[in-house]
Length: 424
Image (cartoon, rainbow, N blue to C red):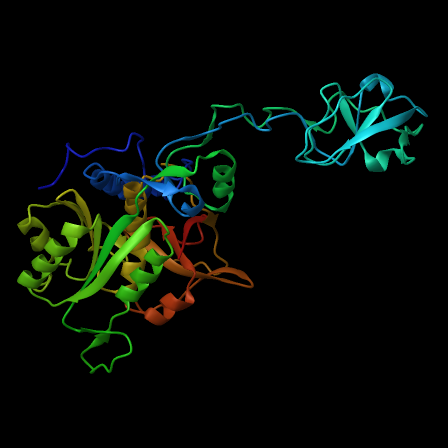
């Protein structure tokens, strides 16, 4: 049965936030709210995946399950920001000659700084407790065992070129919030502050089911009435680019009520999310809706006002996400990004944000309009962002030549305003 009202919720609200932050355009807001509302209804039935322990060195691409706290101040001590000489403020006098009392490289304990003296320090080295500024090497005259302050040296402020203890953050403060994707820069923080083992979300387990008697596998001979399956490779490649997803596999399902329900039941038993292509419209061979309902699932949205992808279906079945994507490849690509990705991110426990997508204008706008949300394929050319002419949602050639889509609100020509851009 659907888990509405009983699922373990992520403690933050996670709106889709896909289309805009500002409120510039009433039609754009209506479009965004309608699509985001559909996504939020489905989110309310889903639970974020459990956490697991992972070696910090192997956490790249995973999602933090707990806040990462600093185990010490950063920096841990006062350190030099430059190669130079640590001195007292009173000793920075024109033509003053100071003996060099010693050298402190990075990674070594510091030494004492007495009055009328200087300590040579390297970048990142601890500065003596008595020092009040660091003079850059290039700003003084180096005399071997002494330095001389030039007459034209501008007196620096106290603390110049010294990075103070805790100026980045203090011990116990949050370095990274739970829900953060551990990318290359986040890995740097883990290396500095994390324990050997880190608590992360396990990967979201996804299964792909491609329905249709007409499908044959890529590379195999195809009769005139058959279609080589492109939807499977499209989804498989996209999911393979998400390191927080574990793709359990994909399989083809013949067009029958029994086969569709059996395949769905098996996929749900081992997956957190199932992505189906085809079988979601209103035809006699569209068995996905009845298979979901036959298993006690609940369809939260179906047949939304958008093009391409109007038949798109979102459901909760046994607490799992079921996305029924239309069968045409352009529709699959659009709806997987617009609906599938934010829902998978929710399951993964990725920190909820509402970023506005980049808003871009076309160099070749037209006056075509539709009475529903229109995701129009575009590509980047030397002259700028251009519309890609296509022959409909089955046009794989135009899809392959595009870089993404712009989201055009109902009854809006493309020369009226910049539009949100969604990249493939």
